[in-house]
Length: 137
Image (cartoon, rainbow, N blue to C red; front, side, top):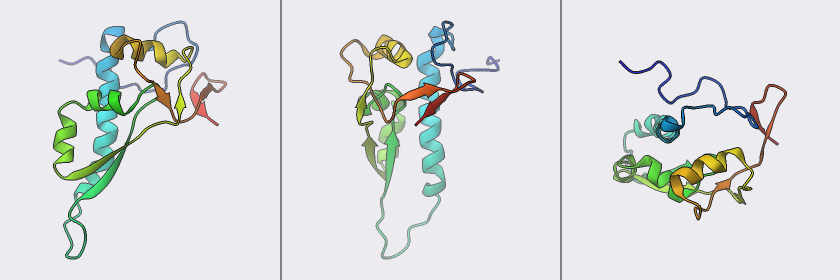
């Protein structure tokens, strides 16, 4: 059987924690799974609408990457799901306006998978609340 926590976290990761929040061997798969799950949860309710006469046949869906990501990294993470989605949807990637600082704890993980030259972005800078959970101001 599959392990009970196969790549999807029940609680947000702690910023600044010295202990890795995941097994490093599963970080890429877990991150990819979360992105795909977000895309599916966003797309599936809209995909159930039947075509109405006079309305455009294709709908547009906006895909947002996670912290320390980009349109390029999300395209890689989505793998074969993206071409299937593009068969019926106009896909638009929305990139974060800010480049991530190299001391961002998520940058180190993403660099392991996407290399030192990957442009890693974010929508807003994350801070930690009193519980150590990510918050955005």
